[in-house]
Amino acid sequence: MMNYFELFDLPSLFELDVNALRLKYLELQRIVHPDKFANASERERLLAVQKTAQINDGYSMLKSPITRAEHLLALADIELAHEYQTLKDPMFLMQQMELREQLEDIPTAKDPEQEIIDFQLQIDTFIAQFEQQFNQLFNDGSQQALDNAADNVRKLKFMLKLAAEARDLEEQILIF
Image (tube, rainbow, N blue to C red; front, side, top):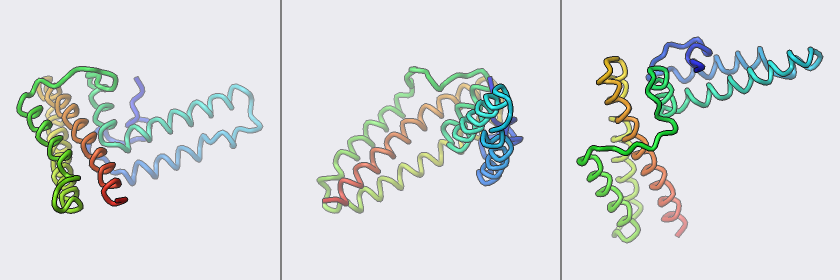
């Protein structure tokens, strides 16, 4: 498996200097851009295209906190990217149901614009908490902590989906 942190010469950490990632991305793109190999052999042109795609994939993977977390876990032999495992945390699942109900009730609230803002702040707080917990668990490095970090990413995915639904609802509210 490709270690994108190594590709970008960055430490394998969840908390990442996104600006340093971007600068390294631009530097690597300049070095291997296919236009620089226009007069090179077919093999060299193909390698440049492949390397460019690899750099693009790595940049995409590392700039997003959720895919960065999944990549870190995959490097630790915990594959989440294509799994269909469900969460077994009844308290979290109950919270999700309550949050969904809260989101569904926003359009009929007395002040839907304020309600959607409050809801989004609440979700943003949860997301920040899950990201911080993931970072702590991943840095612990024990198998139990990594397993808990994987569950944390699963929860984070739920919250990110709710955040996207809230943004969609906000657009609908502001249009009308």
